[in-house]
Length: 188
Length: 185
Image (tube, rainbow over all chains, first blue to last red; front, side):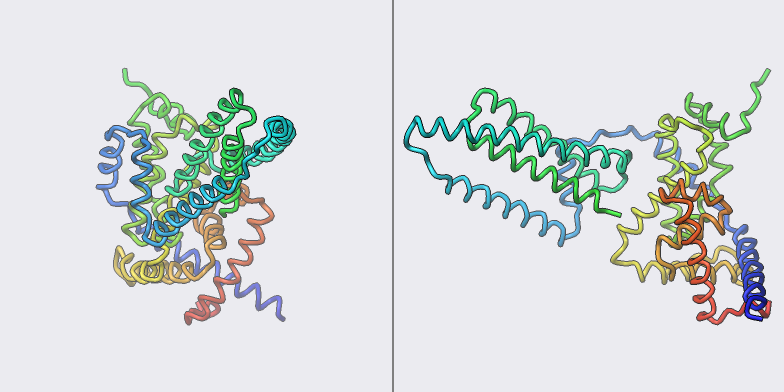
């Protein structure tokens, strides 16, 4: 009895849906749309510059502007405090010994970071082959900028392998990159 | 002697990839109404649906060279429309209720008596969760296969099946709450 009733409802629903679909046949795309498409296609495509990225920030809604501004401020202050609080090594021999120890750790940590990032980056590339969201595009541009910073740090470390400031900048950059990728991957 | 007009989607894609604007026009004429209806059913008002369609076709032309398998044209185009519509919706998220309200009022393109079922369907669809709505629109309204819907949405066929059945049930409940009775029709 119940089954029969369910089938009847389904059949009626299908009929109702078909009527709705038939009615939707009356919907027509306006003629001017093609002209608009042609006009858009004839516009020269502009490559986004760094300045337009900054412009993108200003197109955010106020709460996001505020949040992003706050985040930058907190990161900058944190970095400054950490840099100022770094203990200075006095003994030259001791400094060199510690530096070589740290350097070993730096290479290990660098390797670990790069391994983790490389895995996530592959997933990210698959997910956002063609981003059409402004925030995602900005985040991807941000990753590119971090990559540039990482490259610079690595080059500087070749000349000054024990420089703690460069090392710290490098790991901050790795951390930032990892966090940005994780945020992008978390988006549905 | 005039060259024969391309007919299949595959031929159209090849011609467009070579820069043939006439073939692009043919593609537009072939798909515009279907994609427009999809944009409306996904929850956009008429103005936004037009914007999404315009933006999508511009993207389609600009990116058609990246389409390696022309047989997947349909799902590729639908994916572009669905993603563009999603971006549009996110942009308007804070005005979502207002949009839905406008939608139900402003989408009557012909005599309201003739589009009654369609209007009711749109109103009911807006009350479905986005994922369910997308699956239902593509499979039940656009008559795309479950495999194609899975391809468009980037989900498994099993998920499409379960979401479709759940959305269908939920839609029936919503329509029932709206006072629509099927058994009497």
